[in-house]
Length: 168
Image (cartoon, rainbow, N blue to C red; front, top):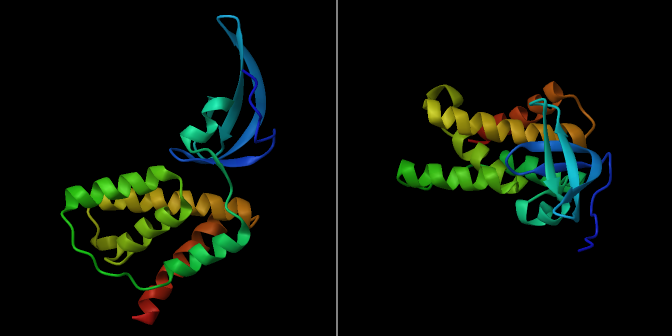
């Protein structure tokens, strides 16, 4: 089976469960006489490397980075006031997990904005974990797309979140 490779060595990609990584190389492996192309993806933040079969890239949610204009729109969304929605925590937590693991930056931004509404210091331990995961995933992508270091990207995202308090 000959599959078309969508990414090249050196491309930055988003793997939903781990965030932004770089394809360091594409390898060929032999399994039972069948040659399989595999992306080798390095995640600098966690100092982790994974191998993902090219044929599984789409179904795993592997995607290119969000473009700069879409990043700006997502950052602007962080500054908008939250539409209050009451839900049982167990259901809300499942929704947060689904959004965080989707790899969709807009969905991740929704989680961050929702949790930010209560103020970080007022969050439970579980909510702080979701907040930190969402902040990390957004900041990582912003840093690479806008060519910033992680501290600058984190500060930019937090500044957008603080703008909500100024509008209220």
